[in-house]
Length: 179
Image (cartoon, rainbow, N blue to C red):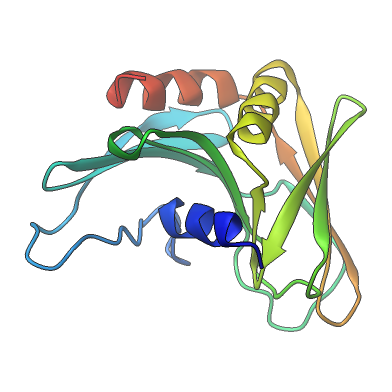
């Protein structure tokens, strides 16, 4: 995997199976993370995490519809995060709840426009910050998002997300992180 992608993964927020509990990686000796729920809007929740001088604001949602069966699939969710101290904004990530087929891509469709994410185990990310920005703009304007991926067993999985409340939740995280 290209080193740029690996660095994006390291800078991206991961949330654990407890919905919106951020596994915020901080350096040794820093204060423990403090989490604040900023609010819920439609299908989306917005939160902020602070650990020492580092801050991350993130929002996410679970799918409203899942098609395709995988044994013991964990929770899946779509997330957008800002990490202003690292100048990392609008980072889109997806936790599938299963491992992707190695080397595969995830396809996202919003209002007949298609976007691609690269995969890493059970996660998917936009290829670069420009792609993140375009995807967020489409999510603000859209009504629903359809996400399709391939499992390591070559099964096609499709998750559908409501974008109701996305714009309001996005405004909350942007305001909280002064973006």
